[in-house]
View 1 (tube, one colour):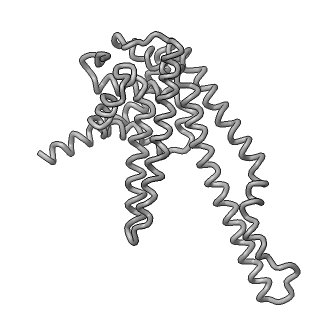
View 2 (view 1 turned 90 degrees about the vertical axis):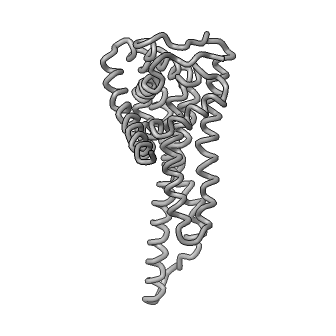
View 3 (view 1 turned 45 degrees about the vertical axis):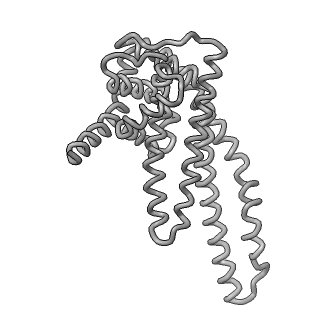
Length: 266
């Protein structure tokens, strides 16, 4: 029984990953969907470019501020081989710190851009998801009102908090000697895939289930498939550039997971 369950989970995971490429094929084979995909794509890329430009413009000043404690150790006019050697190692430490600051900055920019982009484009992505579902069956629709707009934005903010809070909490595993870091990397990677999948499949799921309880039950039930779709978590900036095909792909995955009919709204 356990072996069969494991095989089913592997199959579900593979189904999730397949829907990533399927989203691309389905989007570009349906010209009507492309019209709904262009604007969120432009907005998402514009946010990424703006944040990268801002980071690039402030990087030098940021590095100077953060590396002051390293540069304070540099020796002015070293006159012995030992002092010159020490300066060389300090120079190496400074350059290593520069690279570290740059990498961490890019990661933070990508996270901020993803959160901001998903919040701003949430109404457009929800519309694209609805139009995708409508190509195969009658979708659950919600009248577009200011209340529903706030519902979408609030949902994106909740997903952002969830996406950030859990990895921060998992950092505590690093305090465990020995395998703590290994446990942290494993758990944060698994959670990262699952939460990234949720970020996209939440559009069709939330139209059918506006309350949190049924939605979270759906995410737990289909953990493997949603995590399979979320492997894009490991590809830097992929979700920025290809957010529209990912919305389409996640909607197709949702329809595969609910083959009979959309879940009724309570």
